[in-house]
Length: 499
Image (cartoon, rainbow, N blue to C red; front, side, top):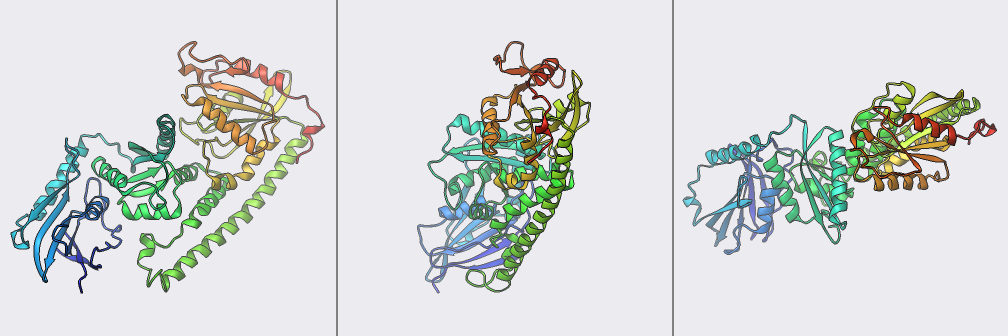
């Protein structure tokens, strides 16, 4: 037939797949459901024929070897229907030369005298020995972070630092950060195969369980990378959605998070993942695969509609509460700011509340409102809000629309800034950009630099328009209260009506 033939064999010598290719190549099937452990290879080797005497192990073979973590890639030359030269490629443990693989050549299959089981166990032992010296934490997930863009290095490092904080907030240990400056994105894989191969090798050596991309991956990119790389693959939006899912406590918060997750999932239901692969049949996936995919999409759309209806009901309840609150004539002060700036800690300091406050991104998800008595018998409502972040996922913004509408009722914003952040200027700009998009830039606001207890004395640049505090130690709180009294508008009928 003049076609290449291949087999996938496990360590017991049992053939798991038989592959019939064309004259030039074979296509390895989906093997993602086979075992994957810390420092372990796939327990599968691929053996296939080829017809070109000078070809041996080619670039595609080596890419498959690395990206799929195969035990070995073996090629057998065929000439006049008889076997000839055998090439045997295997991965290498970490080494000073940074070599990723080694290729052994034998004149004929009968010359292969490699005790394979002992050899492969030794190789895995060397990889695990390297990992034992890394002092890995006992976390469920360990990740390599990847940033690919046209941004200069400083901007890329800033974005990766924030991604690392997001990972930490989701209990993911960060093993490595990878940055690559690219003129344009690869439409199929975001990055080139060579870079993906390098990332996977790092993942194997370091004991990674996942790769987190700083960019939002399109459906086709996410699917292609997940199929090529033998690690879990997620993007920035998925990571933020995971954090929100962990933090949501109220019914409304949980609905909003599920709605955002489903909106993110719907365009990515391509039917080519591990779960779908065994249902696909025919060219383009005829038969039960098509039915199952359409059924999944229909169910997701139905669930989205159901959640939207439920959210509208809760939104009506929220509007009624806001109307009742407005009738009491109490001014509303909203605490806004970048995530992890210390907004909840400030609310607790002002009101004596015990709202959850932690040194994590998005520690607060469900908004909280408390009454605050200011000097001069002036009562106000103080509202804590969800933290802002650069490149906030669109699906989250839409899902949390009803929550963000609370900001429209505010008569004054306390814009809290983390004074210790090296990126505070860009964080202020990011918050103001969101306010601009919501048409709220005209609302009066006080700029509050928090966490000054963590700074060296006189190291922060003084801004006469701002107030410097420590919500933890109370430093500067009295001055902030004075500014609140000065800046709050006097009670009037405007507090009685609500849009």
